[in-house]
Each structure stands twice: as C-alpha cells, then as structure tokens.
Image 1: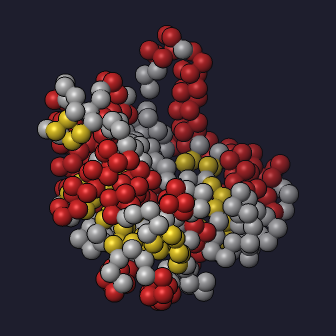
Image 2 (image 1 turned 90 degrees about the vertical axis):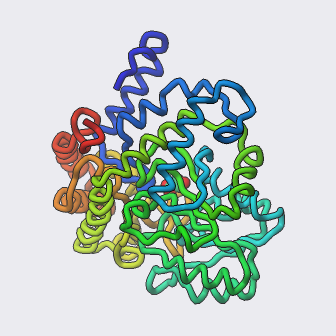
Length: 426
Ligand code: DSN
C-alpha cells in the first residue's frame, strides 16, 4: 500500500494505516459484512474525485466541472444495471442505511407503517429499530423467524401484515443464513397493498452472481451496500423500476444527502466492472461452498446453528445449547486474541443483552477473497470451535496461542495485498 504521501506529512496517521493493512493481512476477517477490495477499488476511492462537488445527476449537475464525475457515475450505473438487471439505479447513497432512507423518503410519510424482521431475528437497525430514525419517524411492527426452524415465518408475516396493514414491508436481512423467498413476501405485500423493499446489503454479490435468487423484478425496491459480498468499496445503492426513478432520485438527493461522494462512486464503478468478469461467479459460488463447509465443521463440533446451516455467506451459531455459560462477547474476545475476527450476535429468542449476546456470526466472503477453499475453511471452523471450547473451560491460556500460531501459517499461505487474493489483486 502506498501511504508515502501520508507518511511525509502525518506519521501518526500513516502508522495507523500501515498497522491496519498488517492487521488485515495477519488476521482472518470473518465479520460477515466485511470483505477486502482490490487495489484498483482502493485507488479509485482515494482519487481526486474526493475533491469534486457534483450535486445532481449525470448531465443535470448544480455545479460546473462535473464532466469526469458524469463519466464515472454513468459507468457505475450501467455496470450495476448489467449486474442486477434493474431498470433504474441510483449509486449515490453513502451507505446501505442511506439507500434505505432514500426509499422510505421517496414512498412514505412520517407515521406510515413499516413491517420488518426483528433485529434479534436477523433484521437491521435501519428497518425500524427504535434507536434508528426509522423507529422514530415511522410506525413499526415486526415479524420473526420460526423458533423451531430458524427460517422466516412467512405465515406469521402474512398474519401480522393482515392485522397491521403496513404501507411498506421490508425483506432482506443482516444475520439470516437462508435464502429469502422474495415472491412469498411480495404476495403478502400485494394482498395488503404495501410497497416491498428488499435490502440485499449482505448478499449483493451473491445475487449479482446468480448464486442467490434475485428480488429485482419482484420487489418494488432493492437496496444494498457495495462493500460486502460485491466487493466494490464502501457505499450504498438503490434499484427500482422506472416508474419510481424520479421519486427515488429526488429522495436520495436532495432529500437525504447533499453532494455525492464521487470517489466512492468511482470505487463502485471499478468494483462492479470486476464483478462482471466470469471469475466473480466462481468467487461467489466458492463463498457459499465455504460457508457450508464452515457450518459443517461447527455442527461436527457440537455447535447449534440458527436454521441448522446456511445457503449464503454466513453462519450464525447460538452458543446457549453447547456452551450455556459462555457469552458471544467472551467468545469474540478470545477469538480476536487468536487472530480470528468475527462478531458476537443476537440470536432468535435472545435471552442476553445486545451488548453481550448469545451467538457468534461468521462470514466467508473475505476468506474466499484471500483464496481459501473448503478444506482451509473447515480447518478454520475447527480452530474457532477449539477457542470456543477453551473459553468455556477456561483453557484459553494454552489454546489461544496455539490457534494464533496456526492462523499465522494460514494467513501466510493465503496472503493479501501482496500477490495474494486472486486475479483482481495482482
Ligand atoms: N453492520 C453491518 C453488519 O455487520 O451486518 C450492517 O450494516
């Protein structure tokens, strides 16, 4: 990484940036919402477009000098249309939450009703949590996953929708390991005459590659973030049919945001081009195969998985059965000591606090970017189980250093940003 210009003027920040690259190289990024972007995406995000104000949209800007901003934004839009097949795309949202905000502002009035999945069942803050603007501005009711199966309770969703009469139903989740049946939720939305927003933030890359069914053409609105499985750098995106294009564009700017972050839009354009290469389908397929391998290794070691397994890039383990006295937070801490970085997560029927919940969530997008296949990921699953067992039995003093040493070997074997990580990184 070229941090020389920073080092010349600001050694304190340069030290932190270099230490962060080292941290990413030397640890396994298993937070399911994270990934490693290519050098090309990073270069675009660090480009001179950070200087440019470009309020408006290509060809209709409020400021002069937007010729190159227009080129970049049009490329990002065209490539997104190719990837996801949407009629209309807005690539300006600063994040997935800003993308959702754009849709809510476009279609709802304050006090309107949103029906969404509970946060502890896999939903997201921006789907109506009281701590988020959505919970404060809109009237929110929530559906759940089936406590027995861990799959979305589609019948319960339909019953709640019939009673609550929502203006918008939100599907698409942050900690849900199974395929979402978009059509079933769309049928409910049709029955109660509600809009349907599908937030595919976590699975944008899987949907683009066709390894998870697409809600595009089914739901009215599809939102996402661009830095998770799609690997196009930090930001958000909204997709919809042409009939909602003006409403969405006006809601994103000037409704929710001022000037777009054009350097991020450039990152999106570059990352989307990478995702249009045939290798990206191989990558996305491998992400899912790796998540299945991780699930298998967890199951073999006695961990209980929400829904019993995975169809996506993530697994969610509920530690309460296997390790009743171990919290997700304690497991997360010891795993971080062993250089495995994942997050403690709430689980359906959560009995602990969101600050120290009962589950751990692990994703395979970043490991797959480093080039890992099923056998390496299965070994990582075993190493995670070793640390979890040791944490429950207060044996971490001996086990964590052993696991850390093995992770050190694995991160050398699957390098990052120095020739490793597949073709887009070379
Ligand atoms: N914080 C992200 C996640 O981890 O799922 C979503 O915004």
